[in-house]
Amino acid sequence: MGESKDEREQFEEELIGLDPHDPETKAFAAHLDRMKRQGPGYTVEGYLDGVRDFADSANRTTGHQRLVAVIVVGLILLGVILTIWFALGDILAIMF
Image: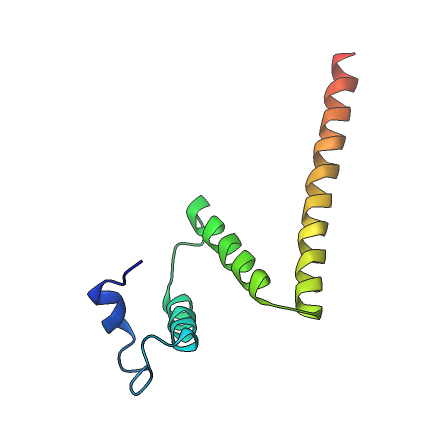
């Protein structure tokens, strides 16, 4: 995956003197990109970008931070499952 000229020049001032092929420098440039990127937060695409950023961050962490991310995701899924369960119960109660 090659970077375009705009992507390389975008953070040129912040990355002066750093090796562009170093994995840490690439990670820092990606971090700067995430910090400067502003997408619409009120659209479906904006929400999905936020979820993607959360998932990427959770995959990079270790230890307690990863455990907290897993617990947060588990609680969200539990809420969705309970909501669907109660909604199906109400639908079946109305139909029968």
